[in-house]
Image (cartoon, rainbow, N blue to C red; front, side, top):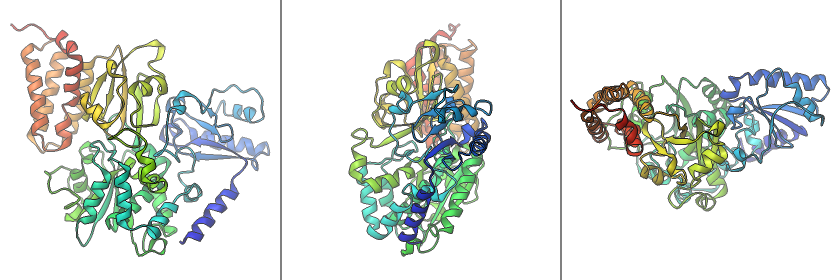
Length: 531
């Protein structure tokens, strides 16, 4: 593959485009609601109406507003057809003919879409995720060519560093600094790993990106490998994501066929290949040392650091580990420049963040907003607030490692530091809205039950501590606990946080601590008097 061949594929794909396209979401959420059959039926209807040469029905990735799925979009008007079914899909034909149709439509100017900014999701809902030609026609792999022929590895790292990109997996470690550490390590082999082991309850950001735009991750990983000097990459993905796995397998096969993975990519002196490693769904394998153990074929349990993976990773070699969303930012940053990216967001949190918006809220789905967008803008304007004029009580961010933010803090801008100040964290991007009827002690117990069950058991503080914390929460909810138990609960949380081996154990008490910090009255109201 050379540049001329890449441009020829792009031009050929553009010439194939028909005047009007109906984009049908074929990501997991809509597929589970029969969107593939809806796409097939609409294609048949258009063929029977002799419109097949003017209108094409394209399967695309996630269109965002999952609560209105299955979703389809008119490429000319930009309007979304909502809650489409096999029974009402013919209404779309009426709309195309300018006739009155009985199907709910949403404008692209609807607050759900208007307030968003897509960088990670720039191709989601626009390209066919199972077609490399569709990705190339949308500018795909041009950035990789420019990197390999016009930039040195150090220049790539400098661009990522100057952009201010921080890891989107939770901790927010500066991406450029991590890349430079791996690049400086001298070794016979180096590895690049994409952490796609998304395990937070309610989170589906990474899954949607992989289902919607798998080549973007491959291109981002390949650029990273060139920058740090790696020859082998792994995407570690959980087995519960069969559609994402299937699309990744297809994308890797297509990239190999075109010479975009393998030896002498774009005729440059650079070799890189990517293999999938499918996890069994253990939450702890999202922790980087446990993840590497699992890739090596061992039991996925964490081990102490240092040394860090940048120096001593897979099989003892320097290893770069970033998550899906971090790699998805790489191509736009190199293509548009670090200065462009660094102007988006806040002083210490650059760019955008993808959230899986869920819970007691009118509009749920996948969103991407600039860092610094307030929680109020996200849950009230984009999400439409609590249905039936209900009131927001709290917002849970960061999954089992995060915390619950009270409604009084809704005007807080979302960035790494502000969420930590509120007793929560960014995490990978799960955001669950709770209404006034939510019992916050039950919420704490729910997340502690998850942490208890998912504890790998390697260290005693996490293995025994989460179990005992869960017992005390149960006792409180049953009205059997006293002030003594409550004080013991707080001490246990502190012990688990300070003495657990890995980050997952250290953050497991966060949902309890944050609900105590912001909703202590609910705990106290459930205690019985000491005898």
